[in-house]
Length: 92
Image (tube, rainbow, N blue to C red):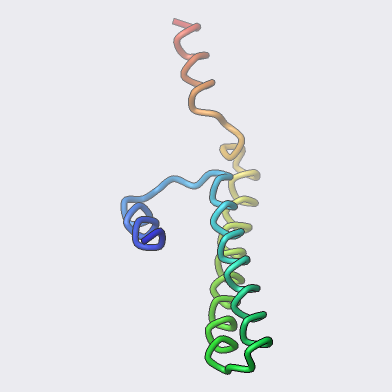
């Protein structure tokens, strides 16, 4: 369900912010848990699924890291919209 909701908002052009790093943690936990389950139960199904999750995690990490570096370089990553709107109303 969470993945479907995330895909929906990604298609609606969800803007990038540092909160995207929050997507990496749950996927990392599921990856490690799945691989550990495969090792404990000696079932190749969990090893295959865990490997696929690991590949997805690596891809997600690369995307988020790249967008973080690009946003930091442009200078728009650390801008808070709520503070920016306060400065705009104070200037008026």
